[in-house]
Amino acid sequence: MRDTSHGAHETAATFHAVYGTQPTGLWAAPGRVNLIGEHTDYNDGFVMPLALPHTTLAAAAPRTDGVLRLHSAGADGGIVELRLDDLRPPAAPGGDWAAYPAGVAWAMREAGLPVGGADLHYTSTVPLGAGLSSSAALEVATALALDDLHGLGLPRDELARLAQRAENAFVGVPCGIMDQTAAACCTAGHALFLDTRDLTRRHVPFDLAAAGLRLLVVDTRVRHRLGDGAYAERRAGCERGARALGVHALRDIPHAHLPAALEELAGAPVVQALVRHIVTENHRVEQAVTHLEAGRPRAIGPLLTAGHASLRDDFKISCPELDLAVDTAGAAGALGARMTGGGFGGSALVLVEEAAAPDVTDALHTAFATAGHTAPRIFPAVPGPGAHRLDT
Image (cartoon, rainbow, N blue to C red; front, side, top):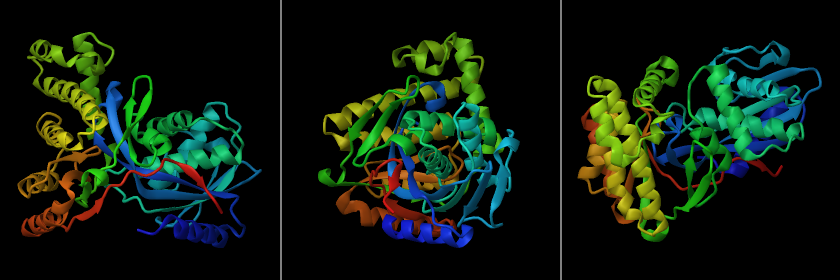
C-alpha cells in the first residue's frame, strides 16, 4: 500500500492533469473493519468498527456554475459531469461509482446546505467489494471536501448522516449508519463503540501489539454487491421480527428475554433466526467492550468465532471462502475469527498471537490453494484515524 504522503502528491498531480488547475485541498477517509457487531446497526444496536490505514483520497476545487465533475483513478470512462440541479434519486449517473459522490452532493443540498459545484478527483487504496466499506470512504471523503470547500463547519456525525442518506436514498442501498460514522469519527489506536440508536460513541483502546497480538484481515477476493436484494431482505426480515414482538427495533429485546422472544416467533423460523442473531450479536459487542476496557483483548477471540457461527447459520450470509478462512485459522491456532462486513464474500478477521501470525497466514494460503480458490490477500488491521484534511 502506498504511504499517504506519496498518495496525496500523486492525487494532486493527477487532479492537475485532469482538470488543468491545482486542487484547493485534499481530504482522506478510511476504509474500516468491523471488529464485532454485524447487521446490528440498522436494528438500532451496537457496533465496534475500527478505521484502516487504507484510504480514499479526494482532491477538490470549487466551481461557481453549479456543475459537479467527478473523476476516479480506479474507474474507466473519464470525467463524469453532472448538473447539481438535475440530480434526482435513485440514480447511478455515469456508472455505479459516481452515484456515491453525486448522492452526497444531493443529500447536502436536500438538507438545505449551500453546496455548489466542484471538481473532484479520487484515488483509493481501499479494496473494492472486500467488506471494508470502500463506498463509505468515498462518501465521507466527498462530504468532508464539500464541507470544507463551502465553509460549512459541520460536525463529523452530521457528515456521516448525510453520507448515509446518500447511500440509502440516492444509491439505493439500505445500509445503517456504522460505515459512514467509522469513516468520519474513528481515532488511531482505538475501536469505536457506537450506539447506532442515539449515535453516542466511545473510543475503546485497541493496541493489540502491546499485548503481543495481531488482527489479520483476510480478503477472500470474493466480491459482493449489497444492492442485489439480499441485504434488503435481511433488513426487512428484522423489521418484521420487531413488529411481531411489539418493539421499535430488535435492539429493544434484552438478551435475557431472548428465549421468550424466540418462542413467540416459533411459527416464523426465518425471522426467528434473524432475531436470534441480532440479540446475541448485541450482547457479544457489549462483552467485547468490557473485555477490551479491562485489558483482556484475548478474551474477545471466542466472541468473534461465535459471531461468525451466528452470521453463517442464522443470518445465512457467509460463503465457502469465508467459512474456510475462519475454520482454517481456528485449526491453525488463532484465538478467534469471523467474517466482517455485509456478507456473501469480502473479508474475514482473525485474532492471533503475534508469534503465530506467520503460521496462520501460511495455513490460510495453503487451504485456499488446496480448495482451488483465488489466493486471499492477508494484511494486519492497525486502527488508524478517521476522515481528515491533508496538508498540501
